[in-house]
Picture (cartoon, rainbow, N blue to C red):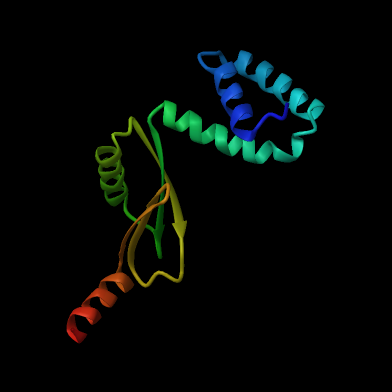
Amino acid sequence: MKISISQYSQALLDLTDGKSQQEILTVTQKFAEQLKGDGQLKNADKIMEKFADLYNSKNGIVVTQVCVRRDVSQDILKEIEEFVQRKYGAKKVELKIVMDENIKGGIIIRVGDEVMDASIEKKLNKLKQVLIS
């Protein structure tokens, strides 16, 4: 029987849940050996990505990508964090800041598949459509 990436990820989550750092280290070493034995080391990245999703979901962690052209103040980042926390009912928000020279200004927030575009370009395009109508 072939074990899926999701099954490996769920097994790792179950095996590490509530364990100490030392126990987790031991479990992950044995898990890696099992992957090697099963010929699944090639899928380790996908397994760990799925594991991270499962772990975050279980622990109420929402990973948020914030795309900006230049540095953003800590006050703005705090507002984004609080907004995401309220919107998604997160216990913890993990912000990943991405600098993107293609953004003319403003901000683009991505949470999973959802995109909240508050960029200047998006606002200008909306204004253009209103003026053309």
